[in-house]
Length: 144
Image (cartoon, rainbow, N blue to C red; front, side, top):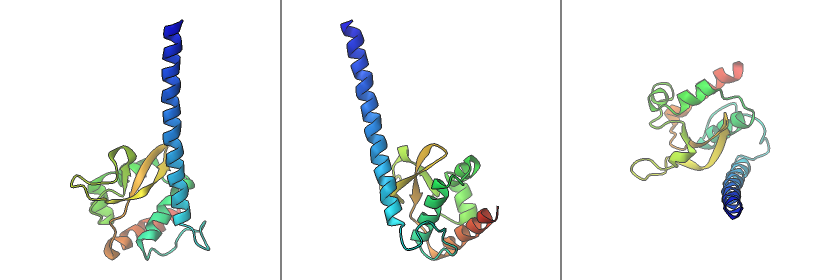
């Protein structure tokens, strides 16, 4: 009986820790929402002028559940992102891998998005030339 109670307590503690992590993630999500807010916070940016526009577009697509599993596979693939977005890093990075590259540089914003049931960081390393490629991808996405 005592052993069962200990095992149950350990499971409950584990579950509480999972819930605390989930709360932290949701708080980050809310921070991103407030970071992306302006007078038209629910509107997709039609023209990608800044890195913030990219972050906002990915965020809005994620909460509208408009990013497919296939697109996630592409966005976490460095070769695909380099070829199609001319980006030096994957657009999305699994939360478990952290936001820093192998050299310790933060290549991803510290807020996360949930897509297809998983948590991801969004790449922050955008320049004017590759913003255009993202903008083209976004325009095609919004046509469908």
